[in-house]
Length: 399
Image (cartoon, rainbow, N blue to C red; front, top):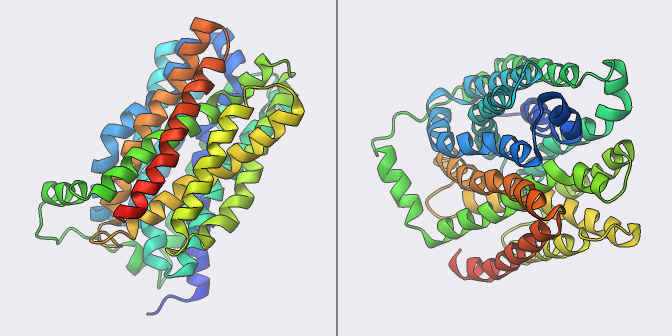
């Protein structure tokens, strides 16, 4: 049975919903940093460790989860991923110490790679040509919208509703994550969708270790993985610490929550427009511009004046939301990868990226405790983005 536009839309909606829940839980701590630190007696360095904890698990789990995805099929694998994300949120809501919160956040590192590797694999299987870039741009808005909801509603709506109890908010996000998994499973079980969603690739006669080495032998693959480390380092650091950075610059907490949502809102617009333009003929030009935007953002965010801060937030939103999508699109369309090895390749990409995702929040937390400010951390980001700009030129020659 041929896939119809309606079937593709349902699949895309199911993936988007899980990724929305992913974004809710991933950013859930950012607007609540001060309350959680006060409640559990934690320092900024400890909170930075917590924020980077799930990325540490993610690094180890990414490749096995990519293989698991290829073996189980996306119907069951994405359900499992969503339930792990939900369990992480529930665990956070019941944490009573630094160690308890750390373990709950680490659980996210099991569900995260299943979701982030599964989503591009599903889209690569169901969409082709220019519609693939558009579909990737649409599903990547899921975590962005989830981040907007988390950042804007936590202080203004939900904390008053839960009598200033941060635990209730995290429990709410956990419930939504569980429901998103159930919704995906129901949609993926519909006639005509189930056969493709259950498609597995366990019949390959090539050992996974050999496939992995084959991918890593490609210089273009290694360079994309290196770029992923830098992109994720900056993106995760800013998504976790931006509200606190703005409060440190003199903003009230509620206002900082709204300002922190600006990059995410801008990112949604960018996700819907930029990836569909990143066809092979102009992909590297777009990559270069996105890296340059991230470079400028790292400079402008060091200022508290609105005239400089606002452009920095806008540029950050454009780059953060689309760089990952365009890099993944580049990776899965490299020779000898394609849909067949998209699960393993995506697992590699996100596993490498989360090395940076782990280091980024920790870097900002530690440099803040040492210098009592965020300028040193942002200066480090400027150096990293200079490397990203240079990497685009090299990738153009290799791909």
